[in-house]
Length: 163
Image (cartoon, rainbow, N blue to C red; front, top):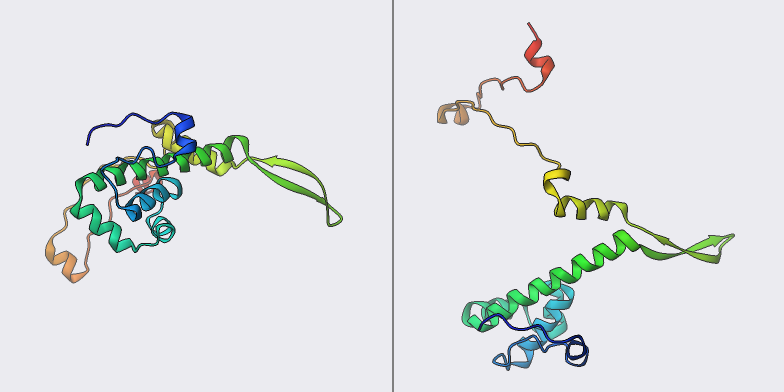
């Protein structure tokens, strides 16, 4: 099974499982793949399709065409999650404004934390949290067993400068 052409928007609306290869005829498999492409979790997709998680894993091992379609479904589900995250981070969600217990209006609230995670994922070289640290410390098996590790090497400027 090669790379398939994406269906048109009209086809995708009229037949949302058009991307699933025709060779996958089992209606439970098709239902699972469609659900997985939407909800992006095996558990929820299995529930929606009326199957067990184990059935999905069995199909993955036994059917190469199904495994390839499942990989596509996973990617589509991930794409849906990313699209939703971007929408919430950049446009926001509509929330009610209350005054004295009554809804008096609506406001759009953006998710700044979600935006930060999207930026870290898209530009890790600029927004990463981790720093690469290299070093060596000789540890023998006897030290590990006895629980007598050598003292750690200095890691801060004040530890280095202490007399």
